[in-house]
Length: 446
Image (cartoon, rainbow, N blue to C red):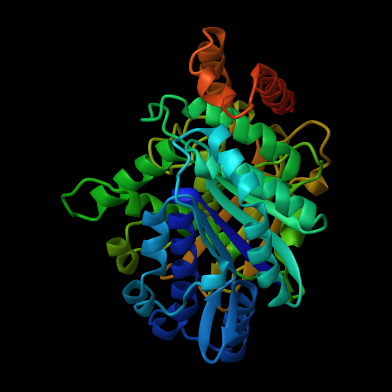
């Protein structure tokens, strides 16, 4: 089954490019697996073949990304489609699946949404080209930022169009929450409107936060021994490394590969609860990989403490907190482990995550979590890598902040005229407030 990536706006296109680079990099790392003895080459080849079939069209020994690259400004699109840049990659974009506007959206959700309606036929035409080159599409992966105009406004409209076109495909939308103190004065308005529209049209929202990504990047850069400030490239690398650990093939207990929609079914027990978070360990700089060794028990223990602390990072944790003091509760958890190690994780997972305090009271112990492993290939250059995907309360704090700051502006009627120019009136904002406040309330009651 195939997955089509929708790269929406500047953030979506930059992250999307990194996603495909990371997928190819991971598929190639088995060649130099010096630490491991690969006993089953055919299983590794099957992993690579499964990954390529899922994310690329293979034609004349070329890899064409199953992606739509959409933006209303030329700069990012030109960087993606530059012939010299594409020649350095092992893959490229299909020109028929690239849409570039000329006017931009001016960091205005309403303008971006209007631009989406104008570009609807072009977007659907490019989507249909991708569908014609796929045997079956199980998952659509939109990637966008909540803050800007194109990613948020046009992105929200594009996702709605895809929902209407493909009502039976899973829509896993990856959203990037803006900095708490951002440069765009209306970023909270944009975020509120995007969230309220996406919550109707998408099946799941995988949430990343710029503040957390920057903290993570600072940690890795400081550990690398290189004296330099962090940049957007560092943050995108972290985001895509996490995201691809979820997207790459993973096996069930019977050793057969499972589709992305199967994983999503484990994470979405109720249609109203759509917020997903992703925590991964170990958290190491590339320079430290060759000098580090981990056991599954220590990685699972660290993940447990990160969950109790409601943290994405493995440093600065309060290790004195006990499970009954957990600061978040969840509806569903999935663990994905990747390595050449044949050791079973079940006992360690049961020890640290079979805790009733971690979960909503209406869950039975048999539904606390699901675990998947791939034991014939490591992930990137990590000897062991463990991804923890959770449908939990963690993103609620960010949503609450967005709603509160939007109310502060809305109460003073600030900047509303910029949206009313494009027929977005006060009722649209009020509907957004009601929708997201209901989401926050429902998660808080878990």
